[in-house]
Image (cartoon, rainbow, N blue to C red; front, side, top):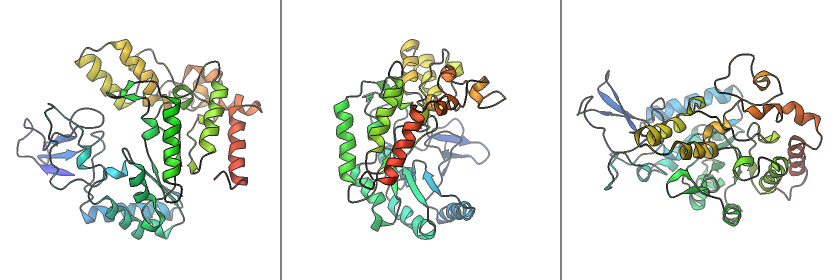
Length: 355
């Protein structure tokens, strides 16, 4: 999505929208003398879904992969694809870049585009679809996943993942109340009981390890992991298991910011510590708890070098606890978290009442 520049390289952006990973959501391109929109990384330009040719190209790409036999799509922040006409600036007294969510979250044509996608692509295959949707409510989820609406099958909502975030956002970590968590999970179970379908998850590439987040990853790591798995798999919906979850992989504590790789973490550290002089220990503590790299360390296969993940150098350091927590050890212990997950999966398959 590009906007012709009337200001030049040293001018200002088309509006005051901020990118999710800090800074402006706009990047100036000298070659074209245009700004392009990137709600996330500058390496992830937003497509102009209002352009029918763009949509048709996306559908062609989807068909290409479906014809090769893939089983479905997980659609990244799909409820951000429709922007308000004119791309208006956010009216605010705040200086700098601010969240433009009100102008693109669940935008004006989002249902039109998803229905069109379903009609032209998705409905022709026996596949599953799930849309990642920050900020989606239960009522909006029904609109996206109601069978009669012919859009998507499930959404990844974030409400239960934001319960340990304070007023300052993700990095403003606060304790998560058990009662609040239970109330939130119950709300989604009841809301989508007859319309739509829940996606059930604790972990993914954007979230820290749940056994460290909502459990006890020390003395009671195994018990915590089994308890959290039970909660998830005994609810109605489709459970998602993220790599390492089934062996109880934990968060990691790298001593230096130089060991981290995630753009969100690095930009936050730069903004808070280098630019604003905030306390390093406090910032690092928030990274230990909520950083996305907690989920991105290599899979721990065994107790050999680099946890058996590679014979080369991994892009990010392996969690040092790989000698105690790994797949090889889990498979050798019939009472391990791994075998508990297998029991839960078997229970769901053979007892319709659970599903």
